[in-house]
Amino acid sequence: MDHIRAIAFATVMRACGFGSLAIFCVMIGLSFQARVAFQAGGFLTVLMTLILIYKAWEAPRRSHRRTELWLYLPEDQRPPENQAQWAVATAMRETYLTFARWTSLVAIVMWLLALLFSLLGR
Image (cartoon, rainbow, N blue to C red):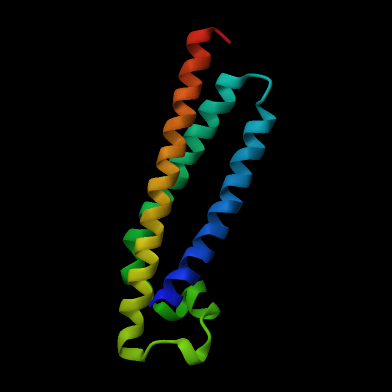
């Protein structure tokens, strides 16, 4: 199960990395106004958090064979068919919720920075 969790962590981290890169590019594009840049970053990060929560909610219903985790899992380390759905869904759900917590904290920090820049009048 630890190997499955490690692969789930890597796949979700990569997806969040691409999402974070997109958010960063938007923020750089708005960097002429720091408050607006952090507001946009906060909003987009909240959106990413909501997507991760939706994916966690959807994980038990999604076929384990249609996940990226299943493709990366070596055939000799795949669990038996009667346990595979539970193992993959549980690992993905836990990983999505972990990343949702982290992204929500990042969103809070961005909104606080936007508030700070707003109070400073910039």
